[in-house]
Amino acid sequence: MGDRELEYVLGITAKPDTKTSGYLKVAEHPDGSEETLPFVIVKGHEDGPSLWFTACEHGDEVLSAASVVEFVSQLDPRKLRGKVVAFPVLASTAFNIKHRFSPIDSYDFSRAWPGFKNGWLAQQVAARLMELIVDDADYVVNIHNGLPGVLMPTPYIIATYDEPSQWETMFRGFTESFLLEKIVHWIGKSTERGARTSTMMAALLKAGVPSVVPELGPETKVGLAAGLRAYENCMKFLGMLPGQPQKLTKYRAFPDVVHIFPSRGGVFHSHVDLNDEVKEGQKLASIISIGGDVSEELFAPADGVIIAKWLLPMIGSGDFSAYELAVFEEFDKPWPGER
Ligand SMILES: [Zn+2]
Image 1 (cartoon, rainbow, N blue to C red):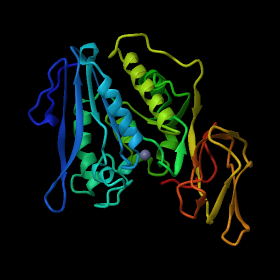
Image 2: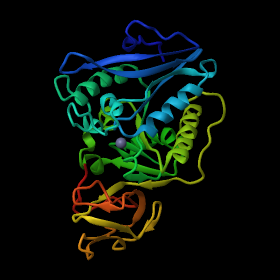
Image 3: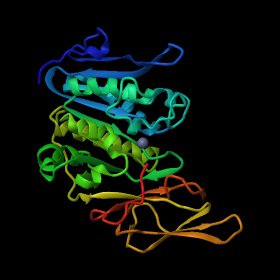
Image 4: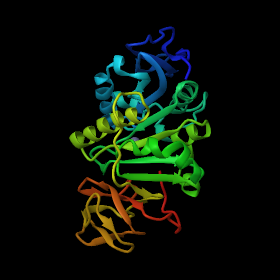
């Protein structure tokens, strides 16, 4: 691994045994002011892999950002082999006003890849980051954490690849090193579903850079601990930190995640919990209309495990989503939709 030029620090070259932080201009706002992203680069003593941590593609997912900041602040460059590049807040404008999407473009950053130089703000930022990542990164960890306060995930990790052989050659060891039991495999047909082709993972796969998405949860304490443990063990696996990496005794593979959407509004009565294993046809929830009647019942469309669950006491048509169901086999019925 060569010591590549760090174009993105705009003249600041990270020296061995140092941490460098700053703000990188990635786009321009309509009034001419700058969209900047905070970054930290930790450079070890010896050459080694370049590992990128990115978070907060959704501005409200502050646990993802906190996990990166906490982890990087604890890294000692003298014990590090290689380089860590951290961009803990990608959707900067949205993050600063505690929104999920930036009001400048109202665009879903996590569906803005590989970006477009003359596109929406999110696409412009993605295009700039794409250049830097492809130029510099050997591995990317892009962290999410559900819809805080609205849809709570159990910790899981997603790997995206086209061919089963890529799992063994590019992804398996890296993905399993995060010590998250539930692994969602977006592979082949499932990669084409919804807008998954415009994710960072799909764009990086095309460019030959392996990346994964850990979803942290269910709340701050457990989610943060899961993230910190995951990142440290992943760096041991990559030989960037001293020590033997751990492995879980068991991992569960899910070839699809199905979102279960309500079509009626009302009080949300869930009959299942996060991490419950459910059978096809099992009743998951009842929705009680304003008039007090059961207006809709939601059923499991396949066997699987509930990996995310709606938190608010009321739900409505168009809400995202009552549940995310990780299924044991590729879902071959009509796709219920995804956003
Ligand atoms: Zn997210």
